[in-house]
Image (cartoon, rainbow, N blue to C red; front, side):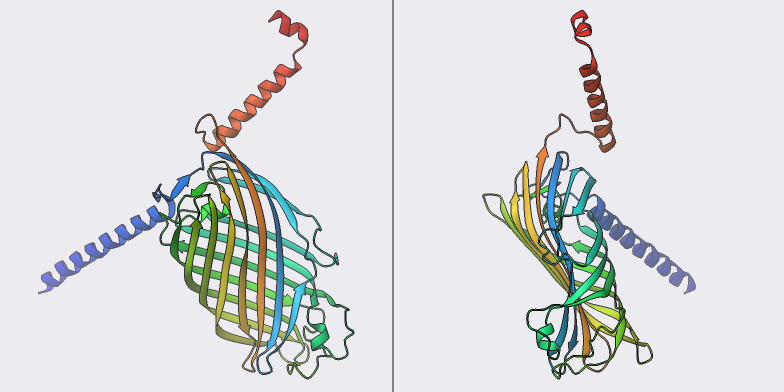
Length: 371
């Protein structure tokens, strides 16, 4: 009997190991070495592309009194846009950007953003960090007592800092290309969609030198705790659907929407009461929409993305809603190269060609005649 059980256990272990090995092999292929359906996706990574972008990132948060359906609505005072330029070839993509000051009427506040992403056939990894300094109360006229009409309630002392890491898995990766929307290495030839699941880690801190809730709020806002700092750490998972519609004229429209459930740890630092912590399950929403034109040589994309997280600050019906948004327009042009270079080989070859060209230009006319 013992021998039979031992043999059965051994066979079960081997079969589980085979299934696990097959699952690991399929997962590796889908993430790193997936074959794409060429009727839907065209690989353009061997072409060298140059690009320029105009983008605007902004941050807002609100403290919501759910009992009275009232809220304090804060937005970052710096609404200026930024520009960037760069190039892409195969797996390498580099861009350099700077703030222009355009579209910012008040020229107050300051924002710093850093973001990058890794685009694999089935998986999109995103990393971003931001720091916003200076906010203003959008609805000061309706929420503060006797606030003069037409004047801004500025809070230069309020700052927000956030760190976001996410990973999304697109099931229909053989026909649906995320890379065709966010970089210049692929072309979505036909309409396709995909179910998507993802995980999200988001850390956010909102703080001020004085309370985030002004003392002069009117009776429509019933929450009066003096909050100096709110920090949220959120870990969650969700899913949704993404689809790109492509017309015969190579114009595309994309919609990617996800909703998830997350564990959220909220910590409050108060000026007139002990610090408090509240743990809860929260919903979050993220999505983006874009449209543009994508051909073999030309690429244009305009759109925006949004992440919204509502976090309860206690059991008294009050929450903080953090929203980050990005609007962006990108124009790119792809060049065909004379052969399929490796990334290092391309830059080494072009450097030597440029150096030889410069040397030939420096030759004197007499040298050219002797030759």
